[in-house]
Length: 410
Image: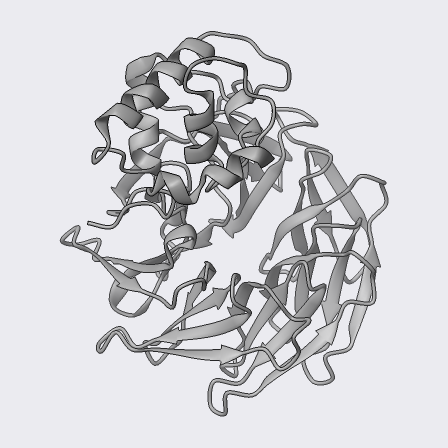
């Protein structure tokens, strides 16, 4: 069985020097070394806290420490003492606001086999299979939702896959966020082919979408670029964003082939001409606006999450009008993933625990929201959501627990 990449403690002790904010006490050094391999330790400070059994459940979903029982006991003792259930700390994430409404949801859940992989971005592929990537484990995973069988494929070391897409021919594509590649998996043979970036400045392929002609478009967040890959030839072309520090993030393809891109570093959207790769900025009105992701409805209207200000946004390309609504859990709710599903707009609030799944009805401009179930854990984060191939369900996830979920309206 695989373990998280941070399972070997001696390799991680240097990372403890970069961790800050944990209270003094027996076990602090061990917790810093173990936890900072996959995330900043300030996330522990911001947690709602658990009793010892809760910390045992949560850490087991992140890393397998069973081979070192003494280390495991030290870590759990420290966390339970300093971050108890019901404690209060500055900046900690609190519960979200549940907005009642007429709909009930069903959640079907699968847990990725390898702990600590940071499972994310499920998408439905050919044959109804659900695929995900384990970013920290260099894993590409597959679920047969009929039988519940789960399989994991090893990707090149250091790929750090960020997202996954399936092409019509059955190949599975991932963005190599860690090694500057796009990758293609043959699910029959398990063979992987990598497509490196033609420019060394293009370091971090992020999120991708296929257009109607089978061209794979993708963002490169910290490289501040948009990419285009032709699977037939393997050619990769790149275009730099005209907005400095815009951090291109989510990407969607409109019915006319135009690419729409979210800016996670500046108050804007980007519009990309698929023929010329010319990029135009669509400024958004308020300072502090950042956009993680967006989607497009049947009328060509762009819906986006204002992650920085805790709002849901709407942009009509025909009129140029921007409209926003405050998210139910407030300005610090940090909306993240978004999808147009069943005639409504769905997104999550990631700044609360657990994440809230929110539905917005455009006709009545009303909200309904639900906590995403995570058992006894205050888990997160949902970073991307898709609609199933039959348009009957949402596919979501929780990176902290390795949960892949299918959501239906009952």
